[in-house]
Image (tube, rainbow, N blue to C red; front, side):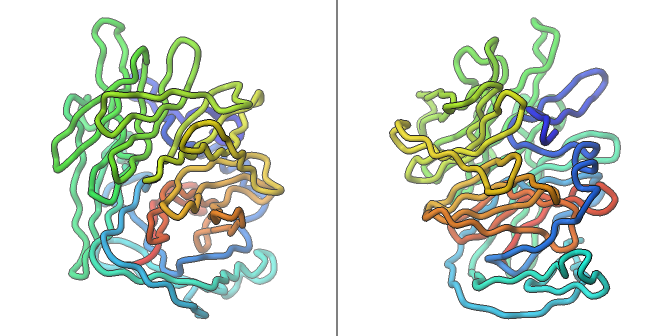
Length: 374
């Protein structure tokens, strides 16, 4: 799905699922794009990587990250091992900066360099979903504590089986996403947004929408997402009380607009599709009167997926060497992020502590979730 993409698809018994909440790559398209050169040089603001691979998963996606602890930034300069170490939770950890032995200049030495790291106290939570070996989705909440990690399933009330997709979590622990339910009138499945608070789920639909997808949630409970109607795909922001909706299309959008993230000041990031189905990132001001286009220099396509309270923006882009994550400062400077030894990196989430989460592809075209930081 990436250069020619509005959605990735999966099938179950003839039912085709459209995933609009994030621009995920299809294995075929990503493989063709990345067949030339692995990810290459990267800069990193966090140097600890933890992969997320639930038992029984065929592909895993990490979509939201919450840190409940305080954060301290310190300079670093470190050399790590080429191979990660898996802990008792099946998670792989890497240290960055890293020069990978045996790779040589063919990979540009893949030396990760950076000037910052983060440490925090308290818990970090990651939400996302994975597909099992029989193509059934499962959403999860992972909570990392000093004593270990705990795993919880996320199932929206009213969902068809386990067809729930968790896409965001805020600083208070509220979770948003979407789920599929069968519509007996239309004889098809429809997507509905949801917000889960303390295990209690409330669903919502944008008025007039055929499908509704919740993507990101602010600490105040605003939800950013996308919806489809007879005219295409559009972005929305749902008010914290759940009674108001603001819908919009980004300037230049031809084939749809997606709101992917919203911060506590009400700024929204997302992406829109041009005439050739290539995404371009955008930042929308609180008033909605100003749009700043985000296109990484040298990239063919760019997606902005998350924004934190400091105005940092995270996402991913395509260039001649493949797909890479990026972090954009509030001032507009760009750092390129690549998961060590991966064939492609996507950033979906960014919290106020500077931690990121997303997915990467390995050499066998398998997706793995990840997070950075403690």
